[in-house]
Amino acid sequence: MTTHRLAELTTEEAARAVTASPLVLMPAGAFEQHGPGLPLATDSIRAERVADLVATALAGRAVVGPPLPVGVSPHHLGFAGTVTLTTTTFAAVVREYTTSLHRHGWRKILVVNGHGGNNATLSTVAQDLLVSHPDLGFAWTPLTSLASDVVAGMEVSEVHGHSGEAETAQLRHLAPELVHEDRLVPGTTRRAELDPLGTLSRHTGITLPVPYDRLSRNGVLGDPRRSDADDGKSLVDAIVGRIVDFAEEWLAS
Picture (cartoon, rainbow, N blue to C red):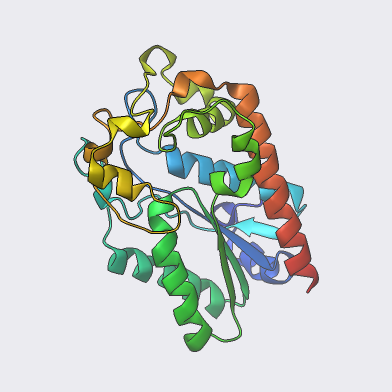
């Protein structure tokens, strides 16, 4: 096998990869606004490139499966260009990708998820697969929150997150050619800028979804100008290292 991307293998190579590369990494992202300076595919780009880095580190023991480039993004529909799936459709696509791979012999699937809006649906799919495919291991991992300690060490705004310091830093490292540096501007950076419902939506431990055009006029939470590619490298290195550590332990189990 000369590549770790399943899409680039022949069917005969794929059949051999089931044994040689028993873990499938499935990148999941979104097609949604990321403010004035980042592309719509930001989450998918991060997920796919992290998956490639993880597969490389695993040295042939994992393949990168079909990506999920459109996710659950109704909260971003107030901004042009956003495309979303319903939770039902996204769950069906994840499940059908997974069961196709299972049919061919793979028993370990790890979704590398770059979009927080997909989290709840991925958890639901994982629970359903415990019943429908008890011999299948299905896991998923976020990206930025996996390196929350690194984010805590950065200079971030009181309100930060979508298209803010950490996410922009990652794209500056992974795909700097897609970052419009001259268009990066702050969005909502302080809790005082949020209305009462927006403030409640930022509550730790309780989930209250609200449309992003209610949280930020330009779709940005934080100030993307306050981070750089070095911050992005630190974040990506931590994310990749922690996914690799998990995968190594899983493959050995």
